[in-house]
Length: 101
Image (cartoon, rainbow, N blue to C red):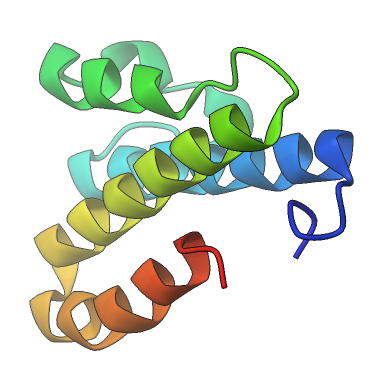
């Protein structure tokens, strides 16, 4: 909704929040400290490399949508590790959120 309302900084905030949750979920799954990204440096490189795509590089609509889509993909992928059924149920709804009307 923030992107739709042209609230670029708010959109960036929420995209970063999704990434933070993915990092925390991965840390929990792998037995690393999860709070305040304390275990993020212990995560496998292939996981953190995919999260680089979620970083917002500029405050324009196209870039925010790109980063949001990457964050959504990362979230669903992380959920699939611990609850594949939940990931399958949420994937269509989350994907719909990343596509403009």
